[in-house]
Image (cartoon, rainbow, N blue to C red; front, side, top):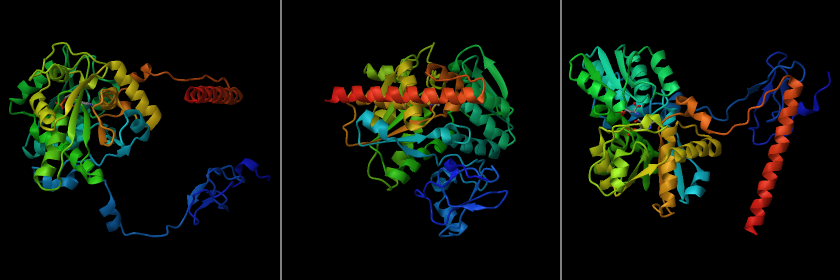
Length: 439
Ligand SMILES: Cc1ncc(COP(=O)(O)O)c(C=O)c1O
Ligand SMILES: N[C@@H](CCOP(=O)(O)O)C(=O)O
């Protein structure tokens, strides 16, 4: 059999010396190459085999590991339990985003990607704690009002604790992915003709009854779980100069600030970050009032934004959030829906991070703050990206895409090659223009 020249090893690149590729069928081994995938004799995908240089014990690996999530900080959490309801929430990636650094014009920008939590948002940090308490307090049912993420998280964690879940959702305003999660986890869903604020009012009233344990952020125990984001950032990079957070019901920014303050009060750190809270233009009761120089929010009856997670007119934690921003000499900023969509695209297409629109609001906010001269250039900024892009698949309709249809394998190859040429020519033209402008 002749060996396809394309399949012959091209070079070892940066592969370890001991690595080989092996055919699972004929067991032939091959020198490794990043471009050798298929056994040239059997046409089977190869497997990678190697012997590690070092074999650390699993105790050592466990010590290094980040999988323990928020309960790694159990000494700093207010409840003592040997049996938390947990799925390893927390320990999310802190990703340096160098292209954004250039755009924003500061020394370091990081994304704390909360989409990497078990149900895809930061809510899981708090839900682990709140559901643990609900179970330990002997509750049979939990209740939450939600724009979608609290619902998904509540439904998941409550099912783990065998608690009945009631979700109050604004009808027609919950993103598809979040609705799917709530259904999948078997929650009882009540869709209200009204907005999130009406749903929250319902949850607060139900919470007055003994049967229900409330899971919204007016429950301060839940926010104790969310403060662990601050500990994780501190653990990795120390105290940043700025933390930028999307704001809806305003619990998260308050919790993160609490975390940083505790680190300082308890002698772990000397400094505090400046907190920036970002709201969407049509749903900005706190940020708009702050920018007008008022000292209380301008609650709104009809909040609107395509970032449905933060479509909230009467944030229950506004006071705590306001304090977080003023105590930290921070700020609130308002971003438009188109700023949010642009930031969502930038994050996805330049940095590989998929955020739902509300999650990208922190990036839109950081860009706007930079344009207004808020940062001084030699600083570290952490943008909290609060929810995963998969939560809101409908939001992709705002982004241009290339989708080609092919009638056969040959047709597909032709279209791919043509598209590649077109892209290369376009990139070349852009580069020539860039050089002309530069010279
Ligand atoms: C994805 C996402 N981002 C941001 C927020 C705002 O968080 P908070 O309500 O704690 O201000 C929420 C929920 O409100 C959310 O689901
Ligand atoms: N975006 C939130 C709104 C509810 O906020 P909560 O922090 O009070 O639960 C959601 O996901 O429902």
